[in-house]
Image (cartoon, rainbow, N blue to C red):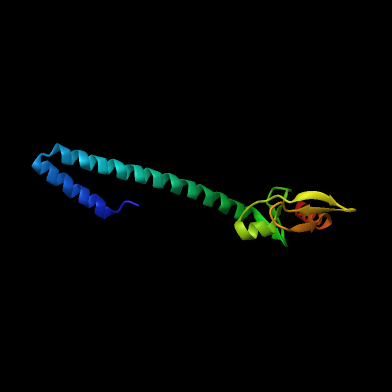
Length: 129
């Protein structure tokens, strides 16, 4: 981050260069200012990206409802892994798989496994509400 001390220092150098009528000193100051501007633009871009990610996460948090280790977003019928959501704020869809004579919802990132009847009951409860 660019400090105000650096800006004040460059202003003093510019005043001195003006009094001395030194073109080389002006060039040096302009180079420093361009370097500072590039750093500020880079920092601004990264802060904008971070801000967008935080807004997206905040939006998801407002829409998220946890039911044990199953997470459902308001307005959706896709079950997400509640464990991954609690640990890292990640929306990882649970995948329906057939295991033996039953069906289970499984997370592809962690060992979270839910009986399909439980997940379908949660979805029906939400739909009816």
